Amino acid sequence: MQDHPHTLDAGEPSPSGGRRHADHGHGPHDHGHGHGHHHHHNHAPTTAEGFNRAFLVGVVLNSSFVVAEAVYGLISGSMALIADAGHNMGDVLGLLAAWGASRLATRRPSARFTYGFRSSSMLAALFNAVLLLLVTGAITYESIRRLFEPGVVAGPIVMIIAAIGIAVNGATAALFASGRRGDLNLRGAFLHMASDALVSAGVVVAGAVIWVTGWTLLDPLVSLVISGLIVLSTWSLLREALWMVMQAVPDAIRPDDVTSALMEMPGVKGLHDLHIWSMSTTETALTCHLVMPDGHPGDPFLNDARRMLKDRYRISHATLQVELNENCECPLHSAAA
Image 1 (cartoon, one colour):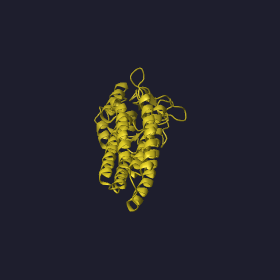
Image 2: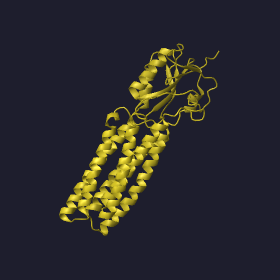
Image 3: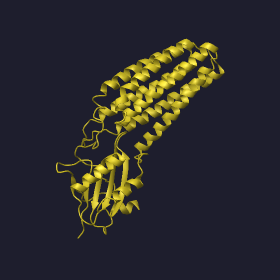
Image 4: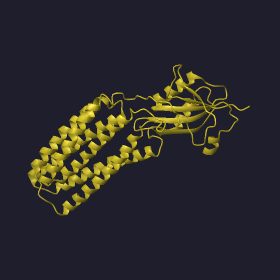
């Protein structure tokens, strides 16, 4: 007589403390992703509600500043201002993507989209990274041309507009300061805007030097430095977004550590078919088969596993399938081997 496996969804406790699903005929590519019930994960409840106004104000402020910076960059002949305008346009796109993703994340799952629209935040990050690289490439090309054909740069205008940039970026960063510890999207927005304030400060210094010395070559040099900083930060964003879309294990999590932690739980004699991936830019999911020949662990085990994975590794949605017969080889274990 063969024991049937049991699937435990650690992301969704029932009123009794856990939810158990009998899993019969588990296909090779079905790892518990096709649950038809609703998932309620609320890691940053203020993101879609309390921070809506912050996103709106941030988008309006930065969009207005991008237009002003681009216009006065053309008027003053400053590639540094135009480069910074391109950078700030990326900020606007980033804020819009984070805002849109936070709104989509509140939509309830459906029969077709069983996880809802959480993964839209990953697609938005990928889109932003590619667009930023394209814009930065155009700015870099024009800056290099300016090195060989320098033009007249109005230093005072550069200083004034860049100083306004410090105020705009600093104010926007302050809007997200209170939420940066509880949500990775808000933390990213805060750090990005704070770093942009520092970039604007660099442009102010460049404008002052040009005004005093008349050394106009400093302007395209500063724009190249800004472009380099954009590429460095954007490349990291592109890499992380690609890894997320490819369902790679998040950088902050080591699968071996998760395996060891699960194997240390009482009753677990074996483990296989472990999968860890990003559901969104803020949520991580896990599926795993646990071999527990001593008997079904019940709801307390589910609660302990859920708390451990969430507290140690910030894995908010864990689906654990328990196999009671250690002598019955799981088809997925054979496939993985």
